[in-house]
Length: 361
Image (cartoon, rainbow, N blue to C red):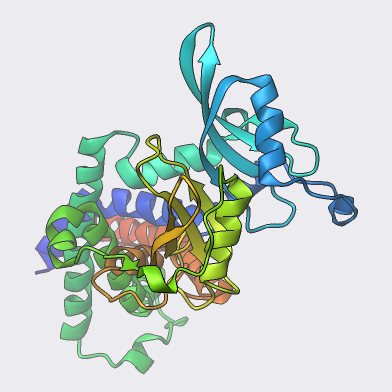
């Protein structure tokens, strides 16, 4: 078993460290992304924010044949609105993403504010800078690391050393013994969270086979005609969609509006409610008739079954957002410890190899 453990360490050890370090950098990914985006001045409270309809009208004056495809509303009150739009540029249909100041409708192109750090680190962590093949490679490294971790614990268990005793570092012993003790102690301490992160990562990579079969199609709760208390709004604006959605879930925050290309399809408004599984935008949805903003159906993010939120739960467990800020900081600490764990393992291998060569000579 020791030889198999060593072989797995040589095959997946370095890549495991890469995934651990880059993963720790992505725990606070949303906060890092926010740092690269423009923000309102500190006196934004004294400024009056424009309505979404006013912002859309101002943008329509700058872009020919403007069509708003979606709007992301910031959870941070100092944030900019994120408009996804299409328009005509030299008689060609063009799509772009705009960061819009809610106080004066001035805008900048979102592409100019992408975080290079976030882009590079995420590509390394998710695919080793490759595309589909890289994602599969990450999954295979995860499987190999899973066996590496399990075999390491089995080797520790064979020594019949108790957990409390194994945590004691023999400072009076030689340097290899101290490094070995640190390596074993770190491995035992990290074992539960490593298994959690590795397994959830593998499930995300192989989602079509490991998650999708257990998911159920989330069906929106259709509202019968006799409980639709809202009146039809002729030529509704973005603000009308927001008000109608918030009326369905009082206290929820609208985070995303998706405008369909066809008027025959409903407008999707996503909201976030306190108590939902942590998600980027929220899991609560309201579908509104695009012609008059009447609510057609809705999904309560608090009442979804586990099968419907399985992916969200696994993502939240994998990146630490399922826990509080303290838990996410713990994830960062574990990612950094992976570097020390890999270095101590490599040093132990080198010391043992040198000792073996010395005995032979």
